[in-house]
Structure formats: C-alpha cells, structure tokens
View 1: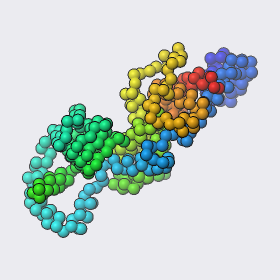
View 2: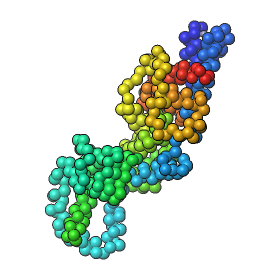
View 3: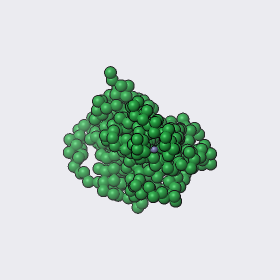
View 4: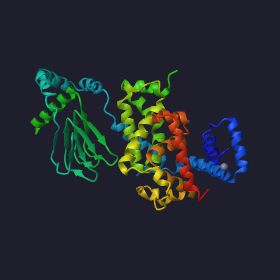
Length: 215
Length: 188
Ligand SMILES: [Zn+2]
C-alpha cells in the first residue's frame, strides 16, 4: 500500500467508515511504515483533543451580568421570548372590552369613524421616522438604526420600516407596519410596541388623539 | 411518529407562546454552544441564537416535517454564524495555510472581552491550541468541524444541515482534521 492511500484510510477509519478488510490492510502498512504510524497516532490524538475541546461546556463564557450559566441562559431565554412578535392581540382586545366598559363606549364611537380611518390606513407606505431627538439616528434604506453607544433622548416612531436598535432609546419605541430588531446592547427605557394591523393602528391613532385632547 | 419538536411547532403556530418557549428551552444552550464555537465571541453568539429563534418563529409555517427539526434549526444557526464570519474579515483560504503562517494567531484575533483570567485558567494548553487553530479555519471547514465534534452528528447529518453531499463533508473534515494536526504537532 502506498502512503497516500494509507492516509485516506486513516481518515475513513476515524470517521468510522473504513471496512474491515481495508482496516486490516492499514494495520499491515502501519507495522512497516514509521512515518504513517506516527501520523496515525497524531491524527487519533487530534481527533480526541478536538472533540474534548469543542464539546467542553465549562469553558463557555457566562453572559455578562449573570452569575451562573443557568442565570445567563435564563436571561437569554427572556430576551428571545421578549423579541418575538406579540401574538394574537385580538384576544387581549376582547379582554380589555370586557374589563373596561368605558372602552366599549369609546369603541362604538370609534366604529362610527372606522371607514375613514381604514381608508387612511395603508395609504402611505413610505418610511416615516418621527421623534424628538433624531440627530444620531442612521437611516439605511427602510431600516432605522440607533447605533451602539447612541442615546435617543425621547420617543422614536418608525412607520413602514425596520427599527434596528443597538443603542438606547430613552422614551418609547413604536414601530408601525414594520419590524423591530433589538441587539443585546439595546435598551429601551419606555414602552416598546409594534403595531402591524389596521385595528392596532386605529387604536394607536385614537389614543394619540385622545391624549392630544387631554393635553 | 411525529417528533416532540414538530408537535410543539404546530402548537406555537397556533399562537401558543409556551410551546415556543419549550422549543427555546430544548435548543437554546445547544445553539449558544455551537454559535460560540463558530464565532468565539459571547455577544455575537447570543445574537445568533436570538436571530435563529426569530427566524424559526417566523417560518414555523414553512417547517418541512420530512426534515428533522434539529437539522432545520442547526442549519439556520450555522448559516447565520457563517454570514457573520464572512462579514467579519476577508476570505482566508486553507490553501494559503500550507505555507504555515506562524504569526497568524487566531486567538489573538478574537475580541478579548470574554477572556477573563478565570476562563483562561480553565483552558488547558491543548484546548487553547485547538481553539486558536479553529479560529484560523475558514467558515466552510469550521462549520463541518463544529457540527461533527460538538454535536457528534454523523457525516450524513452534517451533510443535511449544511445542504451538501457527504463526499464534500468528508473532504472538508479530513482537511480540517489534518490542519488541526499540524497546528497541534507541538503538543501531541
Ligand atoms: Zn506509509
């Protein structure tokens, strides 16, 4: 057997894919070839070291601010679940109507205005960014980026686009008909809301109007 | 026979948040481990884990049950990790490595914020050498090695995750293994 064939066999052997006959051939070659014998020893140890080094979980870093792997893992779970789009908002709507009769009254009022609102909704699909402090906000295509280390002093509203938050938003973050991406460095002091449905949009406009009246 | 994950996925699709949380619980640590071995950086690994689950959530409807759920989720996480690696630095060929760049210490190329004296002390000399060598491996070899050694996937399964023929997996594994052997020669 030539050494280059023996080397191929060595790898197949380590992959657990070398048939018995070839394994025997390899063994015979190793008995007579010092170079291949050394190489085979090295490969076997490499395999063992690689496996132990890569699979060792004790050398994984713990999340910043967490005391243990478990705590770090819990924090990450929370972050993941918190980043998911809010499910079936309609269910919480019905609950709200049941618990707050005054809202039901408001809803009737809202229904009367519905048609005009619906025709307004969906009209503008251009990116709209509004807020009190936009000077450090970066806009790339339809993505609004708050870079890492930057603090937006106030609310940030993004319509028809994506919000990519790496820095801090001191007020509320409201994304309408878009999506939100929060980096691990992101911090939102106020509320973080995503509004994607016509009904939600309507509700948002109504509360804006109502709070506008109140002010 | 329908897998636990497929059942959970179906429940999550109907809006069951708890079911999705179960999926997260099943895979989060595995994905973090994998992404950390790919990227060598805690924060980036956490971001990849989060992005993976967001993608899974968004595409639950499209999950094809003829594929193992683990294959599907590993594929998403691997692709996201590879994307990040490619963005990080210019392409680096394993062939260039045959001339043995000794100054190229992969470990020192890694962000240092995760390297505390404690974590350094936990690493043995061989482990450190393995990680250094892994850091200099191009993403296409690294992904094969990580899937094979960390999750102990069969060559067939690695091929399914990476969506490539087993023969390609073998070639990459063999070249990667030999690359590691050369790097480890000193301590073997
Ligand atoms: Zn030989």
